[in-house]
Length: 304
Length: 220
Image (cartoon, rainbow over all chains, first blue to last red):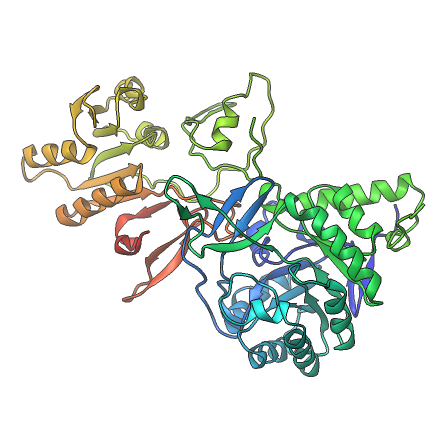
């Protein structure tokens, strides 16, 4: 059995396959269907300082090769999350990565500072790129200066492993990857969902209450591979590849272009065990190709 | 065939031994693709999920209200009741009215309404309910209603339930993503105990709600 373990900052994972924020709830939702202890990590749905209700319905629409969502980050707030979900998550031997967001830099820093003191939280993923929030988050992901300021502000208040999640809709992803590294991030994850929309031609109304949303699923995978490849080439910190993983092959592409780990997103909705199936597929691949450890595969794309 | 990404939610029509039946209509790309399935094809299913209809309360008289293919979701409930009541089936036209023989075989009286009058009375299902209610002699047992169908029909049943003091359970039909409470697609506004509302997930906290829980005036 090849060594599947991955270290990202101070985060130690048994496997390189996590479940992506927003696609796995807070853990309990899938606990009857998936052995949570076998996941690389659980990235919980985005948490802000205070509870929010999220967007009106319809919130998602299925399109060719993907899902457009505009959930709008409903969340129980820091206190609600810690009280309702942390006791559950602490029962498991799986790292918990909390995805955090805010409407101002101060809100990001405040929620990060509070998580710094919460037992059982192993890392923070900074959500700078949710496309479904009218103010704040969207801009932090696509304005390099704002992005840098958020990461720096969060870095100042926590020793937790810090992972900014990059937006795909920027002109040069390498600039954001470097800014994250220079601002003290321990790793970066990418990509977040791709801004998108769909219209009902019979009624001529948008299919989402929020009009626009973020596309995820198999349709964004190849786009994500290209961006992960560029970002990984620009920094020395580890990269977590996210975007449309359905099969082990999809995950292997990310690893080969330079990601140290991956996260399964929308596919969990369809097949809850996808992350575990992908893990098994990666192990089988490593064995078949004679690798002793998964890190040996990272960034080995052949240009010949 | 059209390619679908997500699973599709269905209610169980019948479950006997090793056989589970669902009743569906090809309305979108998922269900249209399902019509191409052939005997022997393999499917993946997660279930049962969510909160179904509760058993009839002691001393209450049951009525069932079905619109669209809603009767499919009510069959096992109807079968579970030792003393049958009345089932009201509504649809656009005769082909929408299904399972009448099955419900009658269980001892239920089935009253049919179609909008074009091609089967049963011409009108909508609540016309038939109203006629039954006004003809009903007073002093009978209190009513417990179970409804599955389009949102407008559920809302109309809920209004009558409040007016006539029925208990009424409605099964809402929302687009769903994951079915297990993670994606937050299928949420609807329910009363929060005070003057306000809160989201509840129809996949895990529903799809069946007592009709007074739902904030009908806030429904899209």
